[in-house]
Length: 340
Length: 166
Image (cartoon, rainbow over all chains, first blue to last red; front, side, top):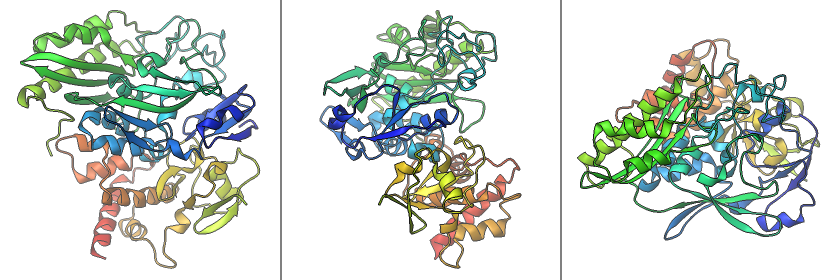
């Protein structure tokens, strides 16, 4: 690890007292950043330590939203969401990610900003446009089984690794941010990430000195919710593909639907075309694959990851069928499908 | 003075902010129970408890833990009396080379608390999961390369029953 100095931030209102954010990184739980610093992929000269930022460690409930502090741990958020029917999707996604050890340390804000696990991004001997702009992409003609098929460019095909961000995309959460000038803004998670284009090293719309303060999730009935994660082993692995789905029916017609994909996109993928295709239609089994085809018409494999296109299609169709089936059997059902 | 409490004793924080908790334990405190396996949060051999919650010591920067209580494998036993899970590991022969065992025991002790507090795991969303599947999922952050898993599940089950009886 390269030497660095520390600035401590215990109150977001003191952001303005930090002299400079040049070559600086916010450090929350560190489950990803410390690892990247060990690999010398991240070499900040200063870290802004957030571990003493107590007020960001709480979940507030208002009449119309859950406000999740940026420093709430993945474990605490999963446990909270488990007991809320309208957040079932979030709990399922969080608990399917990483391990208890990592979830106890990882934070809500940090999870959203974690970096890709592309092998070539991690291997500093390889070219990578995300790590070193303009150096090229070794994944394109390399081992790209885990890489993205949606939102890719000729410069980058790295997939976004977060499960939580996929759930936040489906739940239409918004991040609240603050900058040193004291300006605050709300950014929908669906608009937080940037497609790689020819600048894959710029991953979000956040400024370098802009801090995520909380993630706000609107409270509302969401129907049956499923997070389905497909991976090489049944625990402790990133998704090859994942599907976040919330569906409610009205008289057999798809009334409200949220659909997001993980593992297949260069960012958490909001399957908006599929949603639009399904909304207002009578729920029948042949509909689901058609909706996925609409969403996946722009999908492009790079060789080893071609299988992800049929895999995400079948997984999403299966999840939709399961969720709609639950709605049919139990009209107005909300939350996870539990037998216990 | 900024201190870190390890197994009930206070230690001054290291000067170099790059020091991970794992390296601090080895180099400053001379406690070698928490093992360095992958050093990247992937194997769980360095698992310790921070205020009772299990975490990977290799990814924790010591300076961030000011005021926290760290418990390592050396602090799991009560005086001379082994923790019920330590006894169960012995009686079940739940380890082979033993390198990953201290992380597994720290993880298992936290797991028992998590079950007592009724915190969910991802298998709870399946309709027909078994208790053993739940334990496997919760232990999945501790990777052993020698394949002793079955006995670890027995040990956790025995220790849970012991605790319930005592």
